[in-house]
Image (cartoon, rainbow, N blue to C red):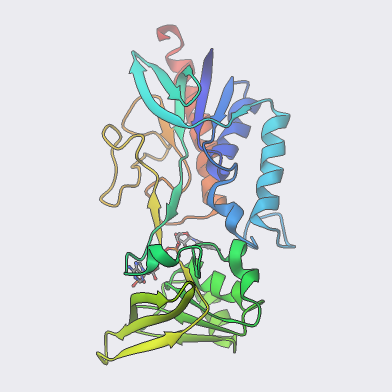
Amino acid sequence: MKYDVAIIGAGPGGLSAAVYAARGGLKTVVFEKGVVGGQIVLTAEVENYPGFAESLSGFELIDKMKKQVEKFKAEIKEEEVKAIGLEGLCKIIETSSGTYRAKSVILATGAHPRKLNVPGEEKYTGRGVSYCATCDGALYRDKIVAVVGGGDSAVEEAMFLTRFAKKVYLIHRRDQLRAVKILQERAFKNNKIEIIWDTVIQGIDGGEQLEKLHLYNRKTEEFKTLKIDGLFVYVGIIPNNELIESRIDLNEHGFIITDEEMHTNIPGIYAAGDIVDKPLRQVVTAAGEGATAAFSAEKWIQEHIDKF
Ligand code: NAP
């Protein structure tokens, strides 16, 4: 089976590329190894995607995008892509279930949460340590939790957790948050949130369940123990680049370098979404990149149509 466009990853970037490619008349397939939607389905409330003044959940937004993809008859295959090879200009996609050929590929493999890498983290994952407030927040009704990190995710999720927990500590390694101002202001105003500045977590401890954190203040050089019931880790994201690491140009953090048409260094291979080297990681930017990648792929296919 030969496709015009094979999209790897069904997050907002991949689904948006699929809408544009399929609506543009290209034979389109989307491969997804996990859950359709990527990281955004773990977000309880999306309030900055244009067109939805009433905020909606990440899951609801993705459901709408998926329906749109299906309307334009792009195929979504729940198969893990194991390798991408080249045969002239044609791309050979090996998945867990078979081999596919496509004229162009759009990489939208996204990113996953970075771990803290401190003692106890692995042991207490699922026993008090979580990477998803939307999934696990409700377990901490009237309990005390901590969020580690200072970016948009940490601040947003700390706020979300105040719906359940009676107290939310936000532990940040510096004396200034990285999150955008509007989120910072909301956090400062929220009397359930207490920010612990200049502090790193050195260990996660307890019995069967997480009970306490061992903290170190980098300014005062003091050590302290903090009793909590749950820890939510939001210390950034790591690009899912295993598939392409050796051939596609990446920046020093492993994100794909593209030009403004979302073209990578390999002819006919494009990228979109969180995997891309860019200043703003949002659903709206992923959607824009997906649209651009699909448009560019279509143009590139037309220019090389006699070579496939
Ligand atoms: P991020 O912006 O990279 O922030 C990561 C935070 O974790 C930083 O505050 C960093 O501290 C801290 N950190 C990193 N490694 C650490 C470690 N080992 N120990 C303790 N702290 C550590 O990541 P993010 O918040 O996950 O956001 C990822 C991207 O998604 C960003 O581009 C963000 O803007 C976007 N996003 C947007 C929204 C929204 O607009 N609604 C929501 C979520 C995410 P330093 O500040 O000291 O570096």
